Figure (cartoon, rainbow, N blue to C red):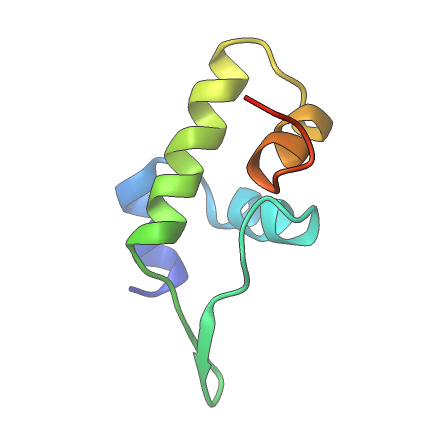
Length: 72
């Protein structure tokens, strides 16, 4: 799916998705030329990030959790 579709399905804005990528919360999408393709793994990660945020975790802590730098 493209970033716009990921945004709709996840309820996260396109700008926030790009911000999360810049902070290491999301893996880069697969590219075909200028088109970026996202998959279910990206959607799952966004859902996990939102859940952790709702539980009061900071983005810095979430980065460490999802990248394996901190045990859940």
